[in-house]
Image 1 (tube, rainbow, N blue to C red):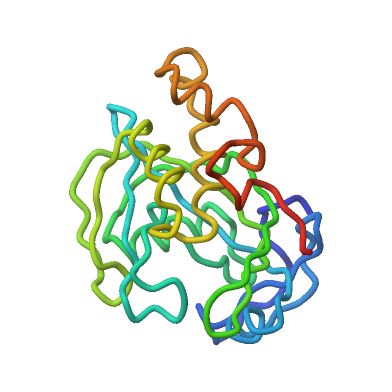
Image 2 (cartoon, rainbow, N blue to C red):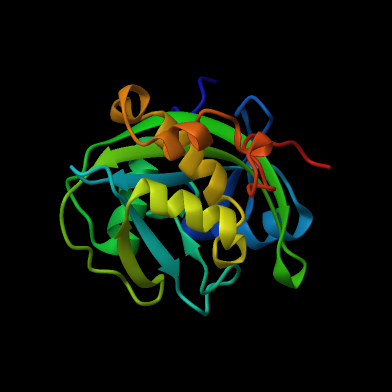
Length: 218
């Protein structure tokens, strides 16, 4: 199956409580409950969205404090898990609406990576994460059950914060930001020296980015 395309798996009535299990090539293997996948560290499909405004700033969110993991931490614009039979693009649009009330925003999948991270409460993130970007200028209306607050942040400032204060951010956001920023044409042809120096290398080789970009389970 082509990564990110619709599968023949039936849509479960579990909705967001069900994730699609995949192999390292993003081939669908079956489904599992979200909690089961995160307790057992089973590789599953995920989507992470990054929205840029016309000034090149990124829209960031702070996760609600009572989320089942990573509560209160800053992360990318939105994230979630494609449902069985749902494309990556459609999942991204659904999560933008559910989390931030953002509609009619065109988004484009740009890359994907596999990562593994141990979280609090005995949970494990082992995901094949599709990075999706979009251009949007507006004011979000967050669902407080999902998001505590949002902010627009300049790329250089975000990269500095990620390097100096990694504990304020989710385990996956550094790799997501790396892939999202690398996809932006304006960064490839311009941008500050600081941004070029950091984005020009994979996160695993950058000082202050210990979690790295594409990683495999240990």
